[in-house]
Image 1 (cartoon, rainbow, N blue to C red):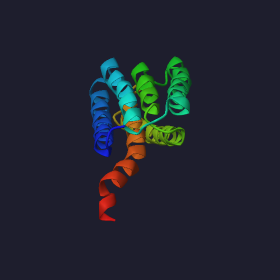
Image 2 (image 1 turned 135 degrees about the horizontal axis):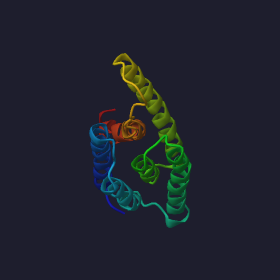
Image 3 (image 1 turned 180 degrees about the vertical axis):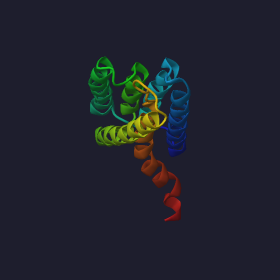
Image 4 (image 1 turned 90 degrees about the horizontal axis):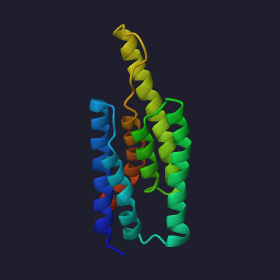
Length: 161
């Protein structure tokens, strides 16, 4: 419905929002509901910009977001993720195709493993007791940026190929 420039702007805004979310999570160990709402409410604009059909397109996106939320709510219940992390991941699932959502979840898990291992090693090296806090928003942002990077690269650098 809109031109490709609007779609590009939305994707760049999403990428910038993810960087902001990661920085805030490192500093405060929280991801605000406002930031999560901004990501979630940007998805319908993105759907309009790519002319996604209501059925089955938008329905699939909403189902993917709900499934991601339900799966990660279990991780929240087990104390492995914060509520803001769960909401951000579910909001991001609204932006990606089902295959993109799977890639996002895999990259997020890999980044989360590396992040957790690094923080655990640092925590032990400093001789600290207890369980360290993990800013998992960084892993979520990395996972989403790994999915977005090829899309943005193709959109912006395609004219040079």
